[in-house]
Amino acid sequence: MKKDLLMLGLAAVLILLLVSGTKFQSVEDYYLTHADDITDESDTVTVSIECGTVLKNWEQLDQALREGTHIPKDGFILAPKEYVLRKGDTAFDLLKRITRYEQIQLEYQGEEKNPYGSVYIKGIQYLYEFSCGPLSGWVFQVNGSTGKTGCSRYYPKDGDVLRFVYTCDLGRDIAREDGEGDSCEKSH
Amino acid sequence: MKNHTDVLIVSQNEVPSFGYLCRSVTNSSDGRRELEVRAAPSRKRSGMEIFMNEFSRRHPAVLFLYYLLVLFLTMFAVHPAALAASFGGAFLFYLAENGVKTAMKDLAYYCGVFLLLAVLNPIFSHNGETVLFFMNDRPVTMEAILYGAAMAAMIVSVIFWCKCYQTVLTTDKVLYLFGKTVPRLSLVLSMSLRFFPLLKEQAGRIGKAQKAMGMYAKDSLTDRLLFHVRLFDSLLTWMLENAVETADSMKARGYGLKGRSHFSLFRFEKRDGTLLGAMGILTLGTGAAAIGGMYRFHYYPGISAMQTGLWAVASDLLLVLLFLLPFLIDVKEKILWKISLR
Image (cartoon, rainbow over all chains, first blue to last red; front, side, top):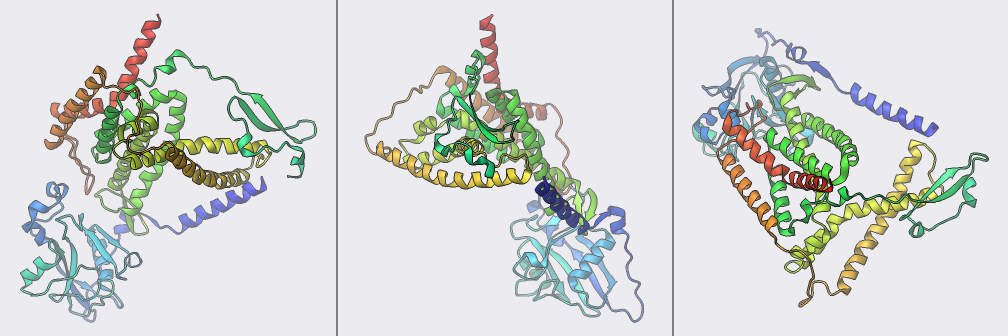
């Protein structure tokens, strides 16, 4: 019986550790954040989240999303807007903070879970990778050109324009739009 | 262990597991363990039980086709009605084959499996409109939970179909079907499918032998765990040996050689034709309903509305009928048997 008690205790400690290491928040608590006020000396970046390519490839889109109301008709999930850049912020930190403030759904794969050593954006606003054809997913651009690193490895500067864009053709459709020759990488 | 030296040591293979019950009991006067051997109560077989497997008496080819169809439909089903029909059909069939007691015990166990699987999905998937709460800054959504439940239902139904498979498509039937055309594959298939029931049987035997030797007989959880570790250890060796022996034995019989003849009692009868016809009609009906979009359903980002109306109900009924075929055949025969006894 002593051995049993020991095992029970061990199991209880394990469960306690698991629960105490987990943060539970209600929906209201989670979304209760404030945007930093823009002052004269604060660094700012312009951020937008766009899915215009989906509108052009409407017939490829998942039926569930086609029937739903989540894809904005103008192609802007988040219209370009200025946000305060905190010191040491990566592009991904910004995206996470902004989506939380604007209450936009975001799912990502952590840095440690993929070989790129950078966060991979799986879906924004219920629009996921492969939601619009086999070559679709999220990419990100800085000042009109595709970043050479993942979004959690890029440190924006004051005045940068960040665009998170949904592609239906591995970035080629966005490059065509912007008049660029080379193709983009996915935003990992 | 020091108390156990006077216990009769029986090697694992010699423990009489058929017709006798062996167990170690604690002597009430001096606390020593003793081996008790009793004749096992003979299993009563009522007339009912003989006719329980009516469905499995159909022609092997038809049974195999039915299994292919059912597993295929279940594995690709996302519609809750289809999943419910599949689970209902599998469980009722299992109940008809194995009796209420076994079925209920298994149902309780697989309820646990179902819950575990259903809870796992929202940990990994954060899609869905209806956020319940945030866990480590990641949303736990109702849609993810429901999708997890659907997938869990799918897995549990497939498990129940496969549990029935053992009694329906026995080794001889599989060998009859494919022994000539693909001898190697069919032998491997039937051996691997027979594997787990056989393993369970042997585990019971080894367990009895261990208990008879007075090992791990305390009522302690840790002891029981160690017992299972030891059991698994010896089971593993037996398993490998058994596979080699079976292969050798089949080879010695000239299995798979050219010109080897088979004997079997399977004949395609009228009732097999009827079953095949019913299967064909129901499959065509469900296929048409699927093309018509009656089984379309999605969980992300929001749960889609259920189709209503006469056609939706009719297409759901088609699936229910298809999945219930084995149970209905079993029950029909049972009722006929009962009436004939009056």
